[in-house]
Length: 237
Image (cartoon, rainbow, N blue to C red; front, side, top):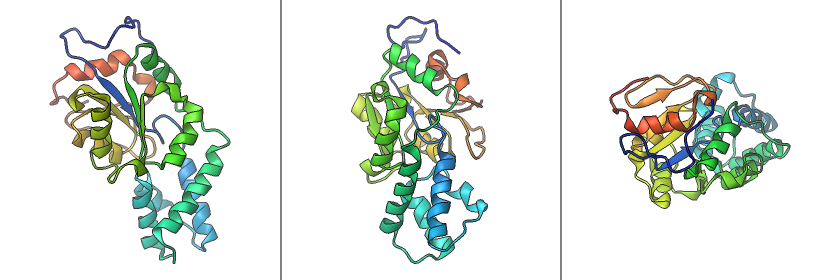
């Protein structure tokens, strides 16, 4: 899907403006949700515990602290949260240093937003070291701002990451579009007052008021994101 609109601004026909686009990282732009689960399984195997696949749906899309704390509780492993976080990040970083695959449509969307000079932020619950490493695959030039999970006191599902991104870019949250792949991220974007596009990766995301659910980033382009600003928040897609 390509855009034929001029490269001058993002104003819609009725004068409303898309002021910024906020993109999640894991599972949204890069196909790494499986990498996280592999890292978690590897670390816990080393600690003497085999993770049940049922835990995967619980930890997907969550911040490191929440996922790690949950796995400590369900396995009873004798390790502190900070110690486990270090092990998980190391195992994950070892995987992504070999490169990460982009989700279908991600590279085209990033290029389109950059070509039209749309303020774009990368908003992730992953640690800063992980975000910075994956920027090598995504291209740091595509983002005016990046926020990692450990850059803030509260991360997703709280609205803080998206409220912070909007404030730093001088944008009104209701004029910003958020693209997320998990219910945790969708909840954060909606709580911030942004228009949210859900692109489910590992687990389904149900339709809801003010939420647009699509199958792939290949369905998302700049005109599509601009159109969200003019739609009533009562619409369900």
